[in-house]
Amino acid sequence: MRQTNETRATEFLLLGLSDDPLTQQLLFVLFLGVYLVTVLGNLLLMSLVQVDSRLHKPMYFFLCNLSLADLCFSTNIVPQALVHLLSRKKSISFARCATQLLLFLILGGTQCALLAVMSYDRFVAICNPLLYPSIMTWRVCVQLATGSWASGILVAVVDTTFTLRLPYRGSNSIAHFFCEAPALLILASTDTRTSETAIFLMGIVILLLPVSLILVSYGRIIVTVVRMRSASRSLKAFSTCGSHLTVVILFYGSAIVTYMIPKSSKQQVRLVSVFYAVVTPMLNPLIYSLRNKDVKGALKKVTKSYLKGRHGIF
Image (tube, rainbow, N blue to C red; front, side, top):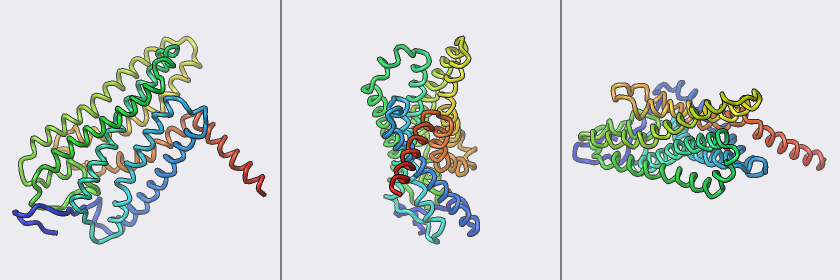
């Protein structure tokens, strides 16, 4: 759809990752496989936390929230990308694009905050184990989780407002596979410096501040673990943090590349965004399941109960 200089864009054309039909078919198979694993993995992790009383702890409460955010995050992006990979018309209405952008920012911002909260939880558990039950009460956990979702909403509203308030009267072709603020700003028919500054400042709030909290928490954790006399306790402490730290590096690394690097370095944004928008939501439940003894134990318990039930039927 070609727009005139006087007409505001009513829809956008998502150019995707490639215009080669064979590459699009391969991407469809890859994205579909990743999405199915994402849905099943996160639903399984949330179900295990609900049914196993051993997982009724603050750490897994926050992990449930992270899995919910991951599931919604991926569902907001991947199904539409799959449709566009198989269709000739790859357009998206302005309203649908705005909704996708808003949800993407809410869920992404919530993930950032939750990862910081989870690092604080690990800090209290390892550095102040005797005070942990009195500090991380269920009321505090609910407040921290609610604050994480609220911060995601706040940042999303600001970023979306500063992105969509701009006039889009020229080209409507977005060099991306979903509606993301940096890709949209390129199409604006006016100076975007104010919007870019606002988005950068929000990036500091939702990316750099949580990263700083995470670094401080893990700095204190490392000092505490090094001082432990028991090698087994040290190993257990590091193992409980390993999964979380892996997820932090994967998610924050790719998000910071997209939102905090200079504009001249944005040519690789599409490939980086594939990682944190499509791949990372799949990796989170896998990482926590494979590296966490409690989760693996809960999975074995549920599997045994299921097999016994089926055996009893037959």
